[in-house]
Length: 195
Image (cartoon, rainbow, N blue to C red):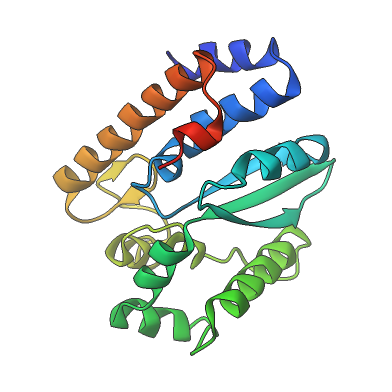
């Protein structure tokens, strides 16, 4: 189902169904365990529904209050995130941005502060967020080195290297999104869907 049609379907549902469908649309790869993190923006009213849905799924979250009654929710699988952040090249990259040898909890607190500072116009956008979303280091570096230009492909992020490999991965993400949307529409709960 195209995303534009999906948004129309979401509008006609109650708040629990709306949140489940938004999570399916924007977070299926993390629900199915093939992506380590994702971002989702919801209203303040939807936050408590989302948090309740995530209970028992193995997915953790951090909240960042945005303007206009909106909340950005950073969803992550702690074990997978920790594993990725422990890769030596990734650690070296993050040290350049002040994350040093911090424990995961402190790294995430710093990232959330940097996001808030960006929203308030205090700091530049924290491009290291790509690492926390599980983007390959090579593409995060490519983005930074090219100021977001000269990419080879755009999918879930701007791709600079190994395009065919990333296209296959994006196809997997899309396939899981379709599966999760069908599961939600058939009445399954998020706890039943999450791997």
